[in-house]
Amino acid sequence: DKGTYPFYMLKEIDEQPIVLRNLITRYLPQNKEPQIGEGIIKDIKAADRLYIVAAGTSYNAGLVGARMFERWAGIPTEVHVSSEFAHDQPLLSEKPFFIFLSQSGETADSREVLQNINELGYKSLTLTNVEKSTLWREATYALPLIAGPEIAVASTKAYIAQITLQAILAYALADREQLDLDLEQELSKIAIAIQGIIDNKDALQKVANDMLVPSPNAFYIGRGVDSAVVLEDALKLKEVSYVQTEGFAAGELKHGTLALIEKDTPVIAIMTQPSLAGLVRGNLAETEARGSKTFTIVTKSIAKPEDDLILPDINELLTPLVSVVPAQLLAYYTSLGRGLDVDHPRNLAKSVTVQ
Ligand code: F6R
Image (cartoon, rainbow, N blue to C red; front, top):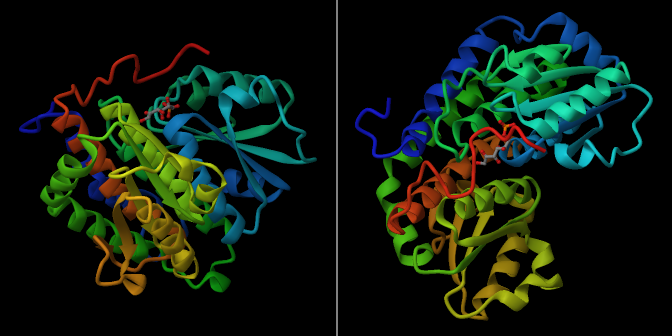
């Protein structure tokens, strides 16, 4: 039930702080070990490489999770688009372990991969929002995202839940004494930060109306973990607003895409990584010299007076949980401003059960 909300997408964006708190309560109870299950931890520790397999937004969440498995837990991790992996399988390591990310648990491309790797006898874990779904049942292990039903075709809270649950899993696998991170505390801070963005959503509606609603195209740029988030930012905007949007690593701009920048082309930069912000600012300046309209989303410690939206400082690999929220709202308001049916973009289905 949408209640007083005009569209499910806005309701589901609003629910994200609660989704985070529910995941903390379920998987990170105070003064206890992360509640992941011994079998999962043992089997992943016995593997020499993780393969994350997913589609669309879930794939974009995997790109963020991979960095946590590598940097926190020291496990080499690859992320694959399931429709490619299913029919063009890469060379596997000696002891692979598979992680399937899927809101619906029914995506046909991911099911095909799971069937293939089950035949090969490899172990797997599905993170899904739908218990008893096919990917839940057919994997060796499964953990629920407990995000509550996601009705809008464009995924929002499931992305947040997938990143959070991967963070908890990477944390459970890590040597936590070395890590210097209180994940429970950090996620609680993040829930508050997300709420702060939601409370100021009117400012984003204005940006959407001024900059994105009238534009045929738009670009999102970022480096490091932000280069993963901008893929999700671009997917969100294009699918609900039909503004043709690309998200990519900021350093790639000069290798081709800069040719598309004209007067008033919207370029949105995400900068959360102090060591990379200077480089992104340089890339952004190159677009401004060609007349782009820019919008910057920046963490506090690297913010300058001219920046547009300031996020609190949080653990670098967890910044996607916060930095994606303004992009979700920009997508929502651009769709709304264009008079579209936000929850039902043309040509798309919530669960893609054909290959
Ligand atoms: C985008 C979106 C899709 C899904 C994709 C995978 O907003 O919702 O890209 O993420 O179809 O679906 P699941 O996660 O159900 O496997």
